[in-house]
Length: 205
Image 1: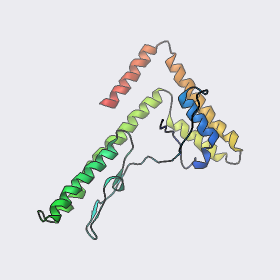
Image 2: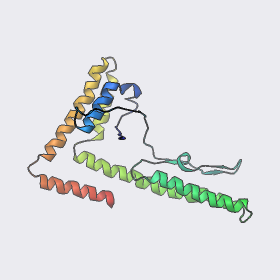
Image 3: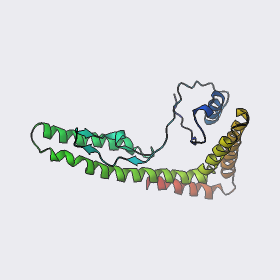
Image 4: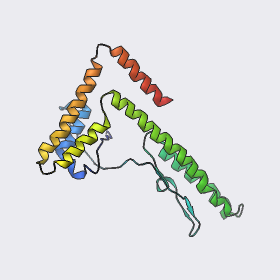
């Protein structure tokens, strides 16, 4: 079983653009062998965000924000889940002490500033991780701006039959593959490999 993620570009693309034919082509291209059978079990859409709530605690009604209700990060680094777990831990022990009469309710007011500060730092790291990954994409010839431009052209040509518009994406994908192959087959591939390795090393920095 495999979980595959593909880039799409709202508002120029939507769910209706991902037809069964296009999805099968994407997955088949990812596998690299059209003779291998597969079955798509589910399809969902999500948007990458970098958002943090202004307040985590509203004392009127004792409303607390924890995890994804308080922040949304790019997935690069896995910091969203870890930050959410830390939110829950930071709130749980405070609630426990207040409920047992071991601390003043003012302790709860500290939860928001503490956890929001951590979220700000972690969201910045997550975004930086994404930008570093984009350096690798561009090195391989996969410039996201090209994909966005292709989606915009496809959206503009809404009056053209769908199969023709889907050819736009197919052409861009073939171009990207050719760019990657040209880099791999470059006679100076040792230099290219070292450059790629230096970019990968940045991911761990």
